[in-house]
Image (cartoon, rainbow, N blue to C red; front, side, top):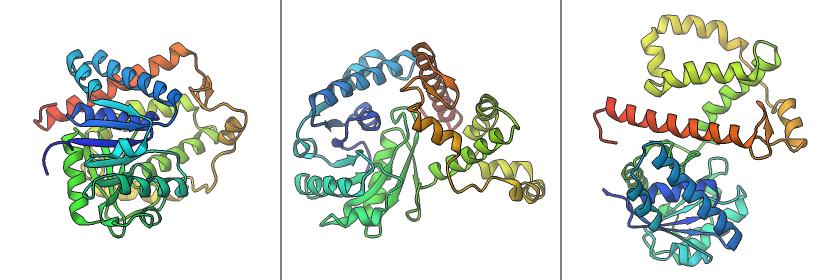
Length: 320
């Protein structure tokens, strides 16, 4: 149960697939990433190199460790080759139920009979995905967060037929990769972290649209207040520290006032329809982004996540 899986097959060479591959490669696993097109493999090579460079630049790993990890990752054009001999298969492709089900079914046929099969989705029903498998007991969700090589959280969710041993092994492998696994008791759309995140984002849109503050103020309130506090103690611990009598009184006043919109805000829809998709197109919710500004945000995110990870490990008395 201990140690990282000897070999991992990652299906999907996008941002998430590359980050997942790096996480396991850094833990000592041999990883094959599947991407059919040469252009996709070239992009993946650049993503892998950039991820390792960021880890080195911000003190996450030494340069020789980055080189060793990079050497443990191979990009292949054949999906069957990617999963051959793998102890763990991670599917991280387009969010399309039929496509994912087909890919998982092919992977089950090509992987060893005891390989664990996982999906990185948090939005599609696991029961429906498992229907494509002959042995659904070996299948579960293993949900990562971007950037996967930096964010500690991994959500592990069983499908209806998932064997308990599958979940236990995924917990152990996640910990071996330096992650904090959160095991859910049952499948729910969005799992835990995305539901919490989108509840906060819905309220953030409502505050901006009501003229209470602007988007920059929301970001500052979270990064300088909520984010830093919740990195140390979660929301329930925070309320216990504050006192539940105070919590009850404030909840009674605020809960009826919080946003309950069931549709995304018109401002978001207008941006997307105009082709303004955020940093990738140079304009988003916070206005215009130059290449230098985008790089600065990425550096700030990487350095903060690595610093928090080291602080959390130090506070817990763990090596990091």
